[in-house]
Image (cartoon, one colour):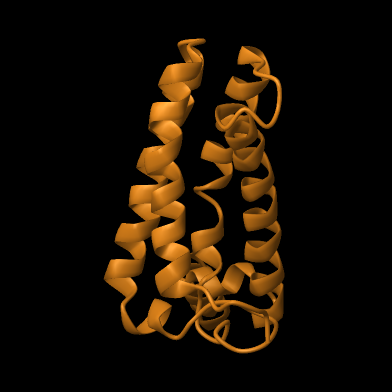
Length: 153
């Protein structure tokens, strides 16, 4: 009976120490997850961009809502860049895994810029949004240029 209890305790202990990969049943699940998150993030960021660029009517409430959604979504995809997700239907370049710390720094920069953009939308001033939108877009572009393939394979 003691052996069974020790075995159960060991399994419970190990289960709390599993890596992020355990959150996904298969590598393709992680890829689907991060692609979906990036799609939603890009959609909401694009709505703010359309307002900042004069391609859509400026609505302070909608700008703030969309920036907040993009900011929240920006925290999600990076748990899904786990071992085995460099193959399959992905646009991720191998550099993500070869340059893990640089990739994390790029993700952090994007999150910081989205936080600034969100704060700018709260001012209700379109000029503040325009000023914050540029650096945010550049942080996204910089990461895409370095770590994203042009087409899924």
